Length: 158
Image (cartoon, rainbow, N blue to C red; front, side, top):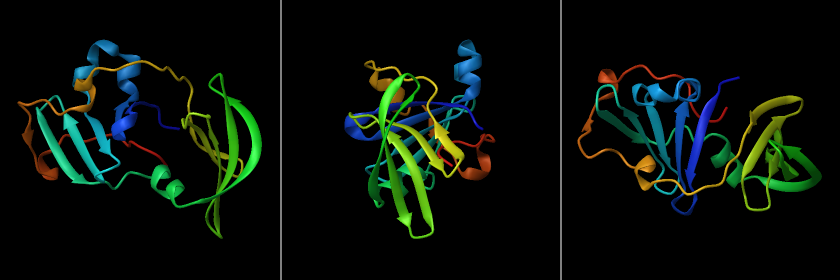
């Protein structure tokens, strides 16, 4: 399992993913690259505070969200994940690929399973207003090519 912190600017469908290191070492948050995923514009920005650079690319890590948008859903029941009640659904992505997802009534994806294998699970959920700066690239950051980027850990959905 890979740990990460995911924050959403829900109305704009922008997701920010920070590595587990930020969770373990909050004072070192500025040392870690993070991703801004724009699900409307199908774009990913890899932002690296260490080099003050950003790599822009087509959204290649939408993972679960893109697959689930096109799935057919059948209700399974209710569950509790991360302290929240969610509705379980079987999501048929294709005849050979089915997932069980648990989504809150307000649309928060809390868990994704494929059979007995958990692919994604929220461990904590908090609702609060976040500063717009969490979802913006700092003005003084320069574009970098992927060859000049700092190595990044694995991010995003399975």
